[in-house]
Image 1 (cartoon, one colour):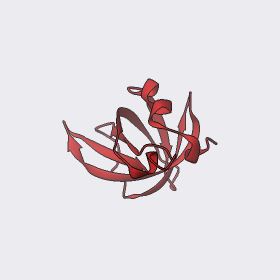
Image 2 (image 1 turned 90 degrees about the horizontal axis):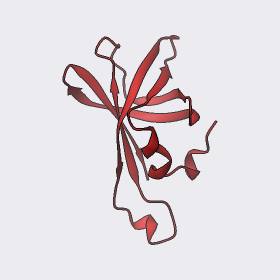
Image 3 (image 1 turned 60 degrees about the horizontal axis):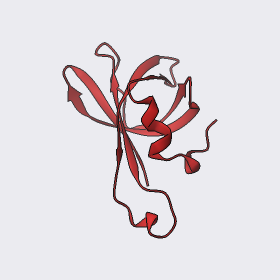
Length: 102
C-alpha cells in the first residue's frame, strides 16, 4: 500500500485519465477515472510540509452511487490506496468524487 503522507500532486499527475478500481464493502467493484489533479494553496508548504492538492474522479455512468467515506482503491501504477471520497455531483450523467490531501 502506498504511503499517503508521502504522496504529492506530482505523483498523481502522470496518472490523470487512468482508471482506479474501487472495491466497496459489499464486494461491488467500481471503476473511477482520475479526471483532474489540482494543486491548492496551503500554509503547510511554507512550513516544509507538502502542498495541498485534490483529486477528481468520475465514475462510469452505470456505477452505483457511493456515499462519502473511506474506500479502498487499486491502481496499476500507484498500487493500493485508501482514500476518503466525497461525492460532489454529476457531470454529463456520471457522478464525480473528490479526495483532498492537506
